[in-house]
Length: 294
Image (cartoon, rainbow, N blue to C red):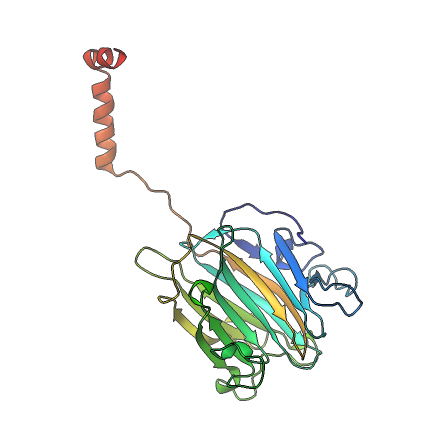
């Protein structure tokens, strides 16, 4: 389901007052899809919480990716592409609550070309299945309440980094307990790519959910993506939430998203301009004008 359309390729700019932040009754430019069965019956599709059935007031809404129901997946992809040479910083609130404890919310960058694959994903994983090299969903070696980065599908989606939050602060969890009152704020920074530099990814979290600079904790710092396959020319961003044999309500809303580096248009140097002026002067000579006419 699409809520509108956005330009095919431009700088990203979303703030809390924009409809694209998920805080209002529409979210132009986002396309959502889901699998599984809704608690009310029928197929599950993610929905905005401004309006039925949640009825949050405008400006205070969320995108609900999953209910507290087993075996649901909900995703939202932003239709606007941006150049990998621009980079991206996105700050968003998330809530994972009122269920039995799983599975996750993830942020992803995809190759924006038709049929393009995922380039990198950041997982806020209550259960911890994405923190294992083998993506295990049954008891194995994984880290519950972890933040995990996984690589490009083109190279097999390898585990790049994973940090259990309680190793940073005892008792810190990905899940936000019984309600939205304990939301957390995540800031993900993807550095601009260039011919000489692959992008890096940094993940910071404000556990107070207030988007206060002093409260952000670096969880994954400037992660090197040099072994992550070819860098796409353009990216699209997306979110998804998932439940399995356990569940939580998974919700997100954007505080700010922006590309970091405006693409410059090459300018002509003085020597080039001088050469062009000289060429134009020559073309004004009668003999040359006559020659070109003949």
